[in-house]
Image (cartoon, rainbow, N blue to C red; front, side, top):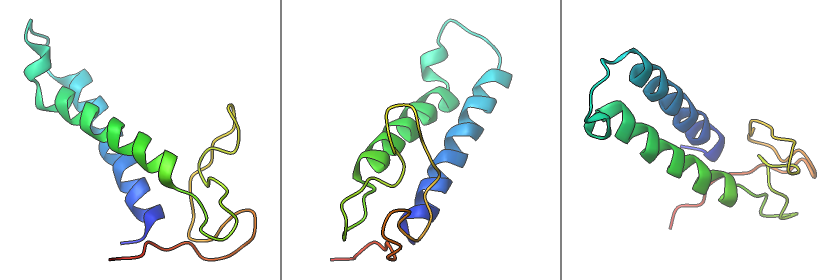
Length: 89
C-alpha cells in the first residue's frame, strides 16, 4: 500500500472515530469508549505519518508545506515531480 493511500485511510478512520464519539452516549468513563481510544491511536499515527512523509529525492515534506499550509499527499512529489513510494525491507 502506498504512503498517500495509507495517509488517507488513517485520516478517514480518525474522522469516523470522532463522529462516532460525538454520537455515543455520554458517560463518566468516556476514556474507555472505543471511539475515544481509536481517535487517539489514529491521531498519533497521522502525526507520525505527516512527519515522515517526505520525498526521497528532494527531502521536501509532502503534507506540511509551512506552518499554516497543509496538503493531502499524492503519489508524486509536488516539488520535483518524482514518484513517492514506500520501500519494503
